[in-house]
Image 1 (cartoon, one colour):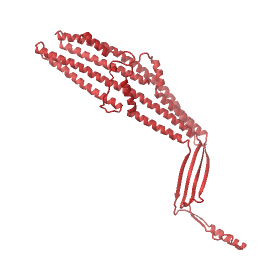
Image 2 (cartoon, rainbow, N blue to C red; image 1 turned 135 degrees about the vertical axis):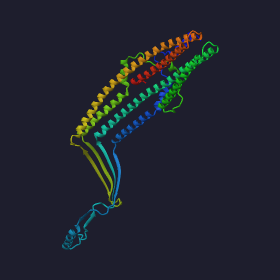
Image 3 (cartoon, rainbow, N blue to C red; image 1 turned 45 degrees about the vertical axis):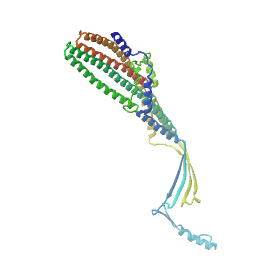
Length: 455
């Protein structure tokens, strides 16, 4: 194969297409799998479910409370209520009977001698209580809704971070495969060199040291291959961990990503900053916390100025012994609770809630600036990666051409072995640098998508 043909083939496989690459369907499938199975994201889903239950609990306070509360008491000993009612009334009634000449009044009334603790006494009742007007319940419900919105935004933050992590881990795995391919090609070249040198020694054209030198270069590549294979297995295990799969599960390879780099051409950094501010869920989460703090101010203000009104009642049976005869009763209640003075506690709570709102507003402004800074850094990191990739392309072409020339001259006895090995090492280094630069562009593009929250 000619030098011109080899160079053309290398350019076709090595030079990335400088345009916006189409999303990888394989990578997108893996990202969706990760969003469904990743353990960290599952924890966020469970936390969201927990906060949702808090909202359900706050909603339940709007309904009346109904409780069945039966009690039964047994008592022995203790204090007694003693009152000599019989000793006082019996003589009086006896005198009245003598005066009237008839037994119209009882004369055997016993004295009172009862235990204060009731014995064989039951109170079997059904209690109902309903808050007619309670500002605490109303604003607590609104606060819980804001907390749910914040938790949903937090989950989307984790999803955005997970997308980037999965994508970068996938690119890292592909880069290890690319490195192994480059090492294998170089090892094949050196093995061919070893066979050539052995023939030269056999034909007394060269001394034996050229064979040992070539074998030494092969052994060095074998060591580098071992490290590359270790990196491949580590990258595979980490990628599968993110997807909550078996660590040794096979990973499908998108071959188009090895030849194309997804770039962000045509979008000025100012537009990307505005997109990031609109999309970033960290700001949504902080806005939800701010609304919760504002509702906390309203809660404490209303609690200090407006009374709470409730109605309730009890109905059931009460008396000695479970006879349920002549023991029924009904009690209705209406109540008002208004704390008129509690040592300025409520005023302090109002001030504390206002400070929290000011703190969150300051935090939102700070995060907006941080996001804009992150966009600028990611944008120019990508731009620098593109420049680096362009530089490595020319390096690869030059190194490839140089190696082909030295290879031809060495086979014709016009170049030294040290020149051949230097050219081969330069070609290997340039290919590895281009591979790293190519996938670095993909990682930097994924990082830009992360800070702009573009899916």
